[in-house]
Image (cartoon, rainbow, N blue to C red; front, side, top):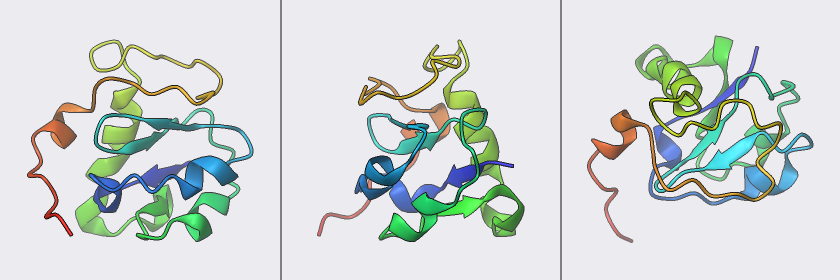
Length: 110
């Protein structure tokens, strides 16, 4: 079971979760962060570090946010970022987002 970053991260990308992740499984897209589901060890440290409360354990996702499981997984697919399973973000930024994130309205400034 992996953890999932949801819409509360879009256009914010605080990054506290990235700094505390012991396995470096959180990747940065243009508008949001994504957890690689096969690299996450389910430690939960990122949940307590996230100031926007945008990270959930898959099994605890609110019903209206379950689609974020697929968004996080599909981000790594050849059709989106093409990252596959690189074995750690290593500080890399990816110059794209999942199409569902691209289609979202921008968060209000301020």
